[in-house]
Image (cartoon, rainbow, N blue to C red; front, side):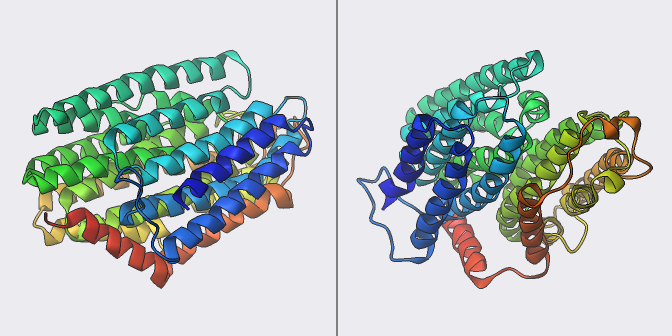
Length: 452
């Protein structure tokens, strides 16, 4: 069964590469991802899967991340046929094949219980995603792809170096190197420099998968090594370092988000902020750990709303600059409204899921007596809200600019329904956590914080 989780998308990737029709090939994405989603549902709530030689198994943390990845990929895949139909002038052979291969490799990350295998799976995910960034075939997308590969290669090399330190029982140095290495894949500051270019130049659905999938896999890798520190009695050192990295990432994101004129690059800095929130919650511990894992889910789903609605706005205006893009709600009533709603959700406004998760982290910080951390956390959240809000309001308010008439793109069912589904899940998480998901979250917290 574990092999099926990886083989189904991988085999579908091969079929996508072999199919000659540029028109019908994109429909393999929702078909393959639906099959993967069904298998994941069986793996999460069916009979326990057998462990394979200690190398492959699905534990509570893996289940949580795997479920998120499968849902995000499925919803993005339903957006893909409509998007690729608009780009019929370009072959989508490599695009479709690499998307499905990336899903297979992300699945491998979630089930890997050998540190070397997890390292290989993380790098394979990076390589599978690289061609997706170059889909537009222009100089800026080429630059973004090379930066993604270069910075990611440095990060994965540091992660390997940290694994060697761990093998020689140098735990503190190992954790620092591993956090920097896998933190590069997450996009934690100051290793975030690949994100603005990659998110800015990649198609919107690829940005959603990077923000909700690849970074979640990297966060899972960080959690694996945090568990080792916890088991070795060095949890306090790890937590202090995680708190520092979390606040630092939030601060860097806040600075670069102020007066940001490219709304897709703004989403990259938003991702830097939320990766900081994730490691901050784990660093605080206690109730905040539950909040961080809930935030992993809420952030991944909300990023789907933001990236896909931003992609539609970009397609309509043929520009990402706030100097050209105004009046999006009038030009694209559905996408413009969801872009605004996504901003309110991702910055912690009720009733979105991020409000509940961020409030839980704050509650955890106060309960643990971390009053300075709680104060800085609130200050940075407020700064991000103001900075991000200035950009978003420029995009959605006012009259449509002259740039609004350069294309005839309008909201349609195929490009709008996936965003609505993402938005529905985000609102649901803000008012109600389904019992099966709550069970997964509590099992993951218990597994992460368990004493040896």
